[in-house]
Length: 359
Image (tube, rainbow, N blue to C red; front, side):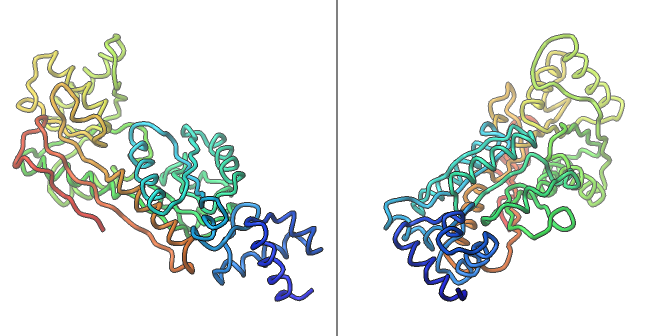
């Protein structure tokens, strides 16, 4: 059977059933699974259907709704709380505007769990996948082949993997966290601080923050000290207090009255401990937090760098859905800029947020 004949039979079967599976087409056409997948890829490229994990569906949301179902896309993230709750909400809002359904998988920053969640979401028959992997850009050398094995369109969120860590280029939407670090240091420098202490948790975001801190410090002519102390996010036990006191001692030894802390919870607890020791915030110790999820709720409201979490989810989902609706275009690497929300904890040049823009 020639390829054009197979293509016509595939499209005829799709019109009858609304959804096709590779195994069923292998039996119906009497050809190999490799041949069926190649046929589906060619029909997808022509805009006549959309490949999904294990088979194919109609060419767009309108086709799905005409068949009495909704286009379904998956989203797999490390956490459904704090930072990623806004990302999920943004993606969900965009999916709703397109009449699509979002299916969530949470990895808990565990690579094995992530593989299971991806497989489970793909097993539903999603048309595409939004992924923020358990591994960050700083751990890209540890990636296995799972990402490249996914046979539906993928958009990465807050990750920027590329060759040689992965076999193909992926669309991605990420926050420019290096720019976020620059915003914090620039604000401190404008307030007259020349020595800035930094405390970063061992997160995937820290990889980009370090890059931004190094570049910004050189450009601004300020000195920075990256502390190795593992700050607690909460607690009054002797170990937690010792860590907080050790960092405050480092700040004093370095001659710094300005501190950038990742994340909000760690910054809030540091402020509490500083005040318990008689320090005034921001007069004796100015603090900027990173993430701006709970920063405004601290005992002294924290000035914070705010990544565009909701917009990131919106943008990534929009990019994926547009790819599913039309002939695929060039791969897009999108970078969104965070802004600085100025509050009480560091003193202010102006009461409004600064750095509000995107690229």
